[in-house]
Image (tube, rainbow, N blue to C red; front, side, top):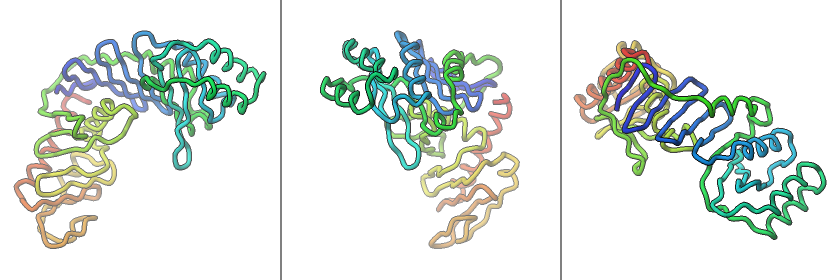
Length: 288
């Protein structure tokens, strides 16, 4: 894996971020996550149909109902508080009668109850894959507009400039990232797991990872953003009260205001902290 001044390169995949925009490109497919949305730009994607679905949602014409247009099925996914709207690109043939039904709904010719009855009586396949996700809270607050979605879709993640090699491997099937001796869980920072893995790596390099990194004989817990300078000034001792961690017995411990870590093996703990600093140092070297 190459950590570059403008992103990350790995086996034909290019990752670049300009928060709140995070982009992963692989061949002719691009996954874009922005504030309140996530879109997969791929060959044959019907941008106009996505725009129509988003506009109906934004204008409050479909509520939290499942709607269909030109082979794209938008479904509401409830959650605690606000949910999200998932758009599935169906593998079936386009159903023109359901297209007509959608236009009747948004024009007010039929109400949502009649639409629901017709949709479920007709039936529509959900076989396919997700091409877009819109967050309900961002729709409600107006934080995301179609112009912003379109701008994000047009972002090209070109990574140029200086790069440094780093021994990091991503194991999607195991849900973790290996940066020996660190085993870093892939945090669900995006709906797409592969994009999440790259954002997680960037989180560690930039000191914004929050969660637990596992060691062979211990764990590193981070609670908020941290810096390499903070790690350099950290405390290494043997104790039972290890920062915010309460251990069952005295163990080798490293802690700062943002990080608490322990291991049964002091050498492993020292190596793990040095590995974190090394990753952040390399990121700083290329200004990533």
